[in-house]
Image 1 (cartoon, rainbow, N blue to C red):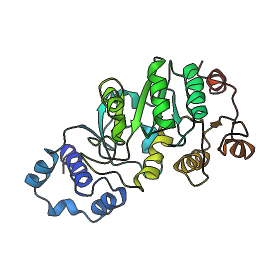
Image 2: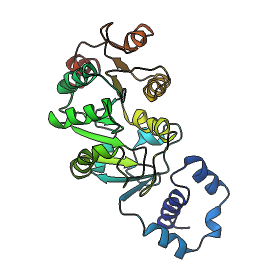
Image 3: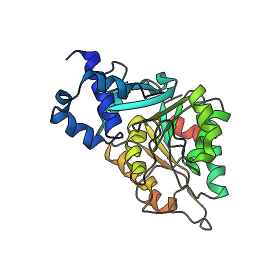
Length: 263
């Protein structure tokens, strides 16, 4: 099988199995491609409106390739060069039901970090959205990793942001076309956010059972720095507890830049 054919087979399986990593890997291990005609592959691939990157492509980032369960196929819109491993990337994660304090501290930290960096987040409501918007407002670039199909903006309230990211930044997903978001997609997509990020900024987390905590745990397992913003005792958040467990404190974004040696 030639390289181009192999690439299309990966895209075909990503479409057939709706981006499910385990099912795609099983299909490859069982050589299901031997049961598929070129016509079936071409017909399936013709349904894709977005651009596509596969793990076989030369520009597939090593940070992802060397991570746990690297996505076999990424569907995307926008500037794919933002995935370049040489760029300084930091993840921003936090509560969907954040408070005004959470939004304010996100703006405060990102303001100092935006220029010369790429912010990676999930475009969820709350802290994710605040992070993307602050990065854009302060002249930085940003990547959104979706937990839904690449053509399915979720949440719908972020459609304007989604459109801007597609045109001027980068939107990626391992889920094709109009795939519906599922609850288990979001912790799974966090492995992409953390794999791409050199550091993690956590402005506000309000539950120890949240997706934010899964991202923190993933970063810890990869021995990557986690910067947590302290919160007043009047705030309903567990940031201070995470700091006591060993996360890094930085008084502002400039200090994170200094500690990461991104100056």
